[in-house]
Image 1 (tube, rainbow, N blue to C red):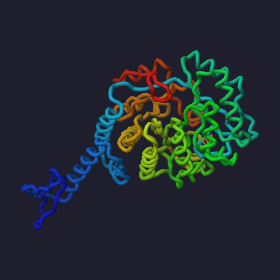
Image 2 (spheres, protein in one colour):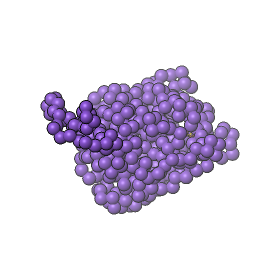
Image 3 (cartoon, helix red, strand yellow):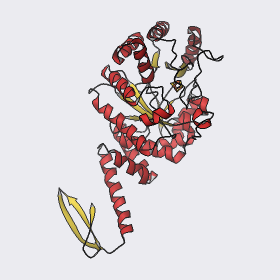
Length: 402
Ligand code: SF4
């Protein structure tokens, strides 16, 4: 439906039926302001309908939804889309343990409190005995996956990681390794003068099961130059994921927002992920999930040196979750980051298009170093999902129910 201004200044409604346009006889003797409001409502309505038909919305349409749509309408549309992708009432969760390989990192991103410089008294590289103790503890708690992340330590090359993965798989053949991320792959490829494909293939051969979408932050080089200038560029991050998808390595996509990015850059980030997902071969995993989380500012260089506070607030997070579901018409799972947003906003996210609350994270040291402390036990996680009106469904990293 649209509207047309007549010569006498009043307005008529136009509507379309089977590609024919009809003009109503109904005149609207009214102000431009009211008409603008009516038009805005009609435009939103059309965007909702197109989203519900799984059409890819463009950047301007995404911005229009983000800036003008009432949050309850976004939640309604996103919840219906969730049912298109994942019908039913089950909400996923999992048990895994985050172990940090090393905290030495040359990147020194301005939002990171976790990294240390080489030679720092509290720097470390985790030993095999420490892995064993942590894995044994995780197995007792029912987990079977390690999320292995950490810094980009200049002393560690590709053979360090392939040896580590190989040794862990020898000791624990059923253990799943969700490890590293595009920035580490870019760094290793540069260090070894090898292609991304070669680095990824070597890691997979050694035992890598899936690649986290770490280090995406905001896929805009303007933002990256500000918050993580030494890390992979936007194109490099996407290129690693493209190669991972060709190898049919399951991956996830992430976004850390609420710092120096603009609304346009947030929406562009979503569209870049969606575009890359369209390239994946049919039947390949591609991005299994998308996980947005807010920047945590506590004690970060970004706050102390540049005065950048987290712009996080609950309603904005809900809006981003809903918009992610609406814009990402080709990524099945949307995960709310309960670790960073806490119980209440996590629960509300499940009514805004999210279908997963992630892991109970037996150990987490990176975002908690910047002020995030919303950890839950397995029982608490299931109670939270039930309290929100859903059925908890424990899953693995491939989002298969177990
Ligand atoms: S966020 Fe990652 S890459 Fe950046 S400094 Fe911290 S550990 Fe290094």
